[in-house]
Amino acid sequence: MLAPMTTAFSGKTVLVTGASSGIGRATALAFARQGANLVLGNRRLEAGEETAALVRAAGAQAVFVPTDVTSPSDVQALVTTAVGTFGRLDVAVNNAGAAIPGGGRTLTHQHSDDDWASTLAVNLTAVFTGMRAQLTQMLAQGGGAIVNMSSIGGVVASRAGGAAYTTAKHGVLGLTKQAAIEYAAQGIRVNALCPGPILTDMWEPLLAANPRAADRVTARIPLGRLGTVDEVAEAVLWLASDQASYVTGHALLIDGGIHAI
Image 1 (spheres, helix red, strand yellow):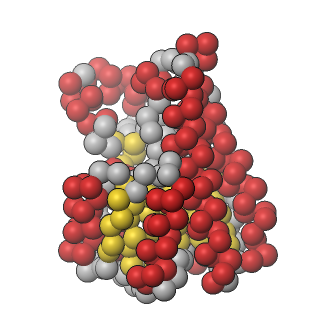
Image 2 (cartoon, helix red, strand yellow; image 1 turned 120 degrees about the horizontal axis):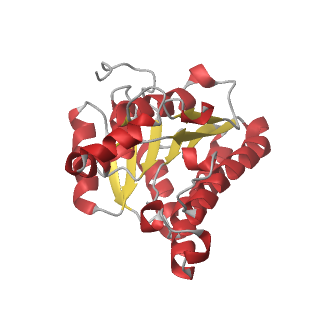
Image 3 (tube, one colour; image 1 turned 45 degrees about the horizontal axis):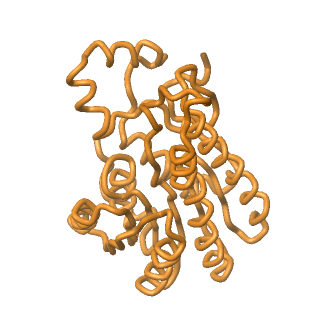
């Protein structure tokens, strides 16, 4: 069930990348229901505009900026738009990412140079370039909060393969910790979220077509089900909120208990 409209983020400016669907869209809408002004960035124009329309329908202001997170100029433009439109940047959620090459079945010796480079570009380097622009603005205004999207793959490796993805998501956690230490004294908190299997637009048709695959996935999750995008969004909100004011450099697992096995 979606939370009712509140004012926890009233008047605050929140930037979300990868906002066209899934976790990014759910996160944008969760912030909208708490009164935030949203600045949304992703490559898919129609889907991005649709998310912005949904945010406005929820009673919040929204600006959509077509953004390729692997382009430093696009990332900077997203921050510039946030400040130019709303005057500041209070929260940044670096959510954009790419799937595991080969569906996660590619072993280390099978990775092509292109797979390796493109996976790290979207899942790690883009987080760095985004943070660089976001931190510069937050330093100028005197504080802020950043939430980086890692993965359960940032904490544990996969027996099936996917070295590039695992490396990138582990790297996000290292980058998060480093920035948290560097900017704590300036009032900037930097945390990461590590989702496990989450029911997104990508998963739904696959599981519908192969119910046995769904059973195999859920069988290894102690809570016995996939997570929802709204559950991840609520975790993002907590990390960005004043309720987490003493939390920085943290990697929050939201994985149904997989890491505890």
